[in-house]
Length: 585
Image (cartoon, rainbow, N blue to C red; front, side):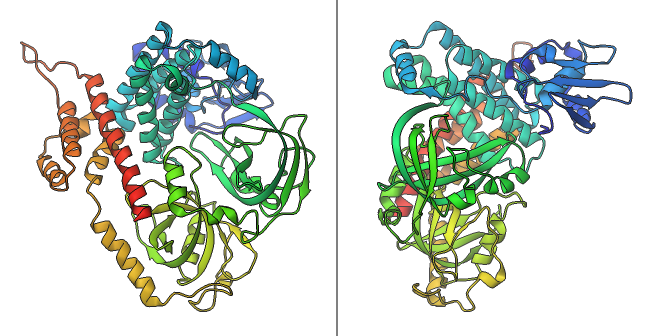
């Protein structure tokens, strides 16, 4: 995927790929790889790719995205039936739907909901079935086998789902395609867990929607646009800013604020771009009212908003009727902000695991560092629980990793932090913001501000107002964390196969080998259902019957997808249960 190209609508990519002959479809992935190395020039709303010394390919995006197949024009002799047009569309980012970005007032949303049928319509059942089949084909092939042709089929199904009013399935299917492209391009922003979560969501919606009704059906359908409701006047206090960097080619910053009641609101600035935009967005002026505050300044100040509009997720609207001016902020130890840290940690965890906000407000004591496959993490202790604080982003342009490394060199330091919960069998969260280790009333945005060695305390004792922790206590906490890890239920045996299926597809799980040892270990730990799901997953992967002539019958993607969905669902729910137990034990 090339961020230099304008986004292309899913229907356009699907149409161009479908128009290719079978011979050209086989060459599509190699054609994409060749086109990715060609120079790109932008001229206003037109982006040109030099296919060779004498031939250019043009993408016309008058509104910033390619919405019609005719807007992709190639100058080669085989055009418009050439490979280049489909390759360019497959190389470009996937465009968002034109009707998904505009705010929608609350009355319109309620009217649409009231008029929606109580059960799925035949068109919706057919559309969600198409999404299910396309997603099952992607899962069976794995990231290595899910090339541009399978991606185009999923994009076509997503477009059909959107036309049928299944906006959640359509949006998640598009996110799966974006993650697949990032995986195949070895994008540093790609995470296997994100792709697995996307596949799970698509297959789960497709499985539940045909028999759903009422509120469940409404949630499974989703909404086309983000509804904003009037919220009158707000007095907000800045908390922190975090960079946004997605595998889909979007970047920017989000600043979190809170009102006097502890409700959280976000001010965002996210647009197409890379890590450079994520770093620079913090110094851009927030796009709300007449305020001249940057995101970095708002995180440490306050905001008075009149005529505010707010989405269900707490995002502040920036309509013409909104007025905002700078106001005094509040420190993390001052009211009303301090009440966020006064909420018991078990209550915060329970809320995050049941679909509420996933931010955690913790008081922790640093205890050291631990090596993991994805990089070192920061060990800490909070509310009597040893926990692991990890980096929210791995991109080297962002300072997450460097800041964690420096903080790990100050064991015994007590800090007030903001983190994002990571569901896992042990206490784990992504560190987003923290107090400065040595400067009182100063806080750090972990993804935007860079710590220096001089910022650390000169001894292992905590700064003024903190309680030092002896080295022996630090070692004890680390040992406790290690012991806890060794006592964990071996759910990783099932989770590993779930992730292997995503990356390698059905053939990886169909390889000959004895999986009974893993099943026996799960049963010894009391996880009988997990053992049965693991056995069924391998059985579905290896199910290749022969016909009367000894030829292999075609595989059954539906059966493999059902087995994978069951295993993924069980793993997901058990992770949530173990996560809550780990934080509250």
